[in-house]
Image (cartoon, rainbow, N blue to C red):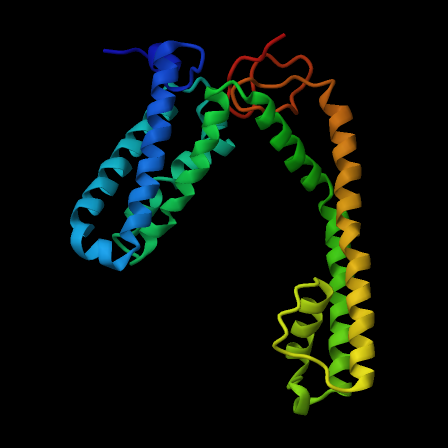
Length: 267
C-alpha cells in the first residue's frame, strides 16, 4: 500500500524518475483524449468508430477522475490545491463527461483538457515561461480598472458614432436601427471592416473616415496601460519568492510553502 508521501512524489514531483514518467504519460493521455474528442465530432468518423471513441473517452474520464482524487488525497494542503489554477483545471477536465449524462453535447467541453498540457512547462524545466505567464496575468489583473474605463469610453464613442450614422445614412443605406449602426461603428473602430454595411452619402463617408482614424488612435491605449503595469510587476517580481511547482510568485518573504499548491518554497 503506497503512502501519501510516495503518491505525492509520483504525482506532483518533477525531479524524480517516477514523477517525470507519470507527467509524460499524463501529457500523452491528455493529447490522445482531446484527439479522440476531435475525431468524434466528425460525423463520418463518429458513424463508424463512435462506439470505440466513446469507450476511449470514458476510459480517460475515469482515469483522470482517479488522478484528481489521488491529487486531493496526497496534497499537503488540500484546499490550496483544489482552488489553485491546476486544481480547478483538473476538476473541470473530468466534469463534462458526467454532464453528458444529463446535457446532450456537454462532453465537447472536454477540450478544456488541453489546458492541462501547461504541466509540460514543469516537466521540461521551462518554469521561467510559467513565471512569465503569471507575470502577464498579474499585469492584466492590475490593469483591470483602467481597461474598464477605456472600454467604457470606447462603448460611449461607438454609440455616438452609431447614432450619427443612423441619422445620416438611415435604413435606405443599411443602417436600419441604432443597434445595427452601433455594430457598424464597433466593426469600423476595431479596424475589422467586414463591409456588410457601408455608408453611401458623402457626409456618411466623412464620418466613417473619422471613425477609422479614431480606431487607430485608441488601439494603442490598452497596450500602454498593460505595458506600464507589466513593468511594475517585473520590478515587484524580483523581490518575491517563486514556487518551482506552479510558478506563482506573489508569496510573503517569510513563507515556507506555496499558498496556491502547498509545495515547499526555495530559500
